[in-house]
Image (cartoon, rainbow, N blue to C red; front, side):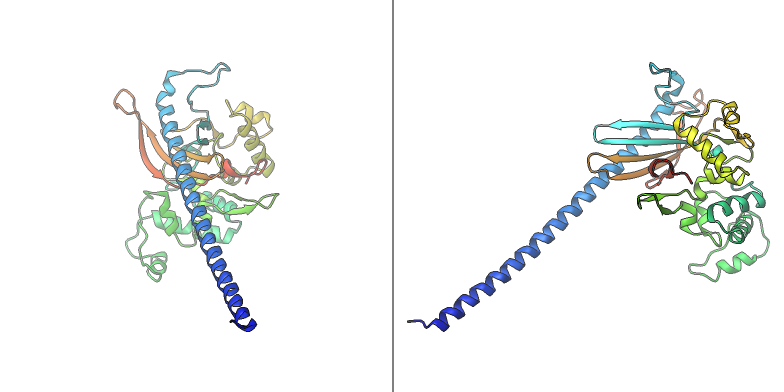
Length: 328
């Protein structure tokens, strides 16, 4: 017959074994839950990505159909026209905003003067000394040189080493190699809004282009930083952004009516456009972006009137995701 001590030891062993099995079960359940959440997040991210790419492709198709001049009952274009800066799209799985940005709303990096570059970069980075250094690096990069320059000596001392092109920029991403440039300055950064939520702010890629303008910039899509570098006051920039967010400008007289001299501003774009989509998946709210740079060609000569020049799987947009009322 077992003693009370033996029965107590057996009970204690059972309790410890039960506690161990419970801990193992909780650990397994936690791992399974974490893996399930990860798979769901990956699935939502992939679906939102396809939603964004689908919005870009639909935007390209609407550009092809633009010549049909089909109108909605309120008189607005059914598809797209040159003054329509945004396309709002609804899909069964979510919604998307496609920004239609002519490259003529950006400053041409190959032809901009050092002073123009310095003013623009100073607006974006807030440091005039740093802006002058980066502007000098841009001029060095695009200028011919028979012998290695001081910038080349700097590039040869970092890893991996390289030498400046000393020719025109072929891709705006080459700007990332210029001395003093950072990803935050090029792509933009994130700042907290009024509620503490991070929002995207524009970078130099929103204001510079290899296909950009040297004079007039499209008022409906020109970046706030580029407008500020043209000498506009913060109030003038805010007025233009607020007006075009509500309704696109149809003529420059509407700009003058705001009390803003339309110096350096124009309407419409050239033949190169960037379509930038920000798509939000329902009901999760997962956000993904994509963009494409396209060229409009002569419809009489080419069967496909829109040619895709560049495709980007990630193209965060300040205008599409920043809080209401926030402009930078």
